[in-house]
Length: 94
Image 1 (cartoon, helix red, strand yellow):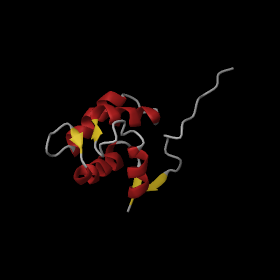
Image 2 (cartoon, rainbow, N blue to C red):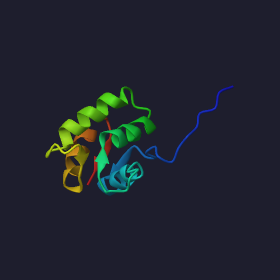
Image 3 (cartoon, helix red, strand yellow):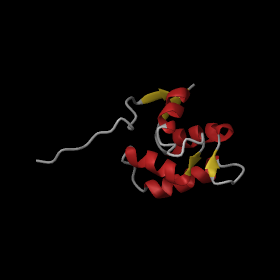
Image 4 (cartoon, rainbow, N blue to C red):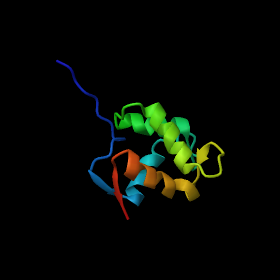
């Protein structure tokens, strides 16, 4: 018999608000700098058991990291929300 370990990091509902998405994403900000790196985004996607989390994290960074500093800043989070809605099959509403 196999047991699946569940984490609090998974999104609990099918539809969430932008604020709930941001709060969930902050759980993966391991260095607590207020920005999300590609590795932190990859960890977040892994918690959802997303296929090819490394590739989706890379694509998410391309879509959201407008200033190309390797981090998704607070100003860029809306771009990540758009990416998640369109490409990660998440339902994030205002």
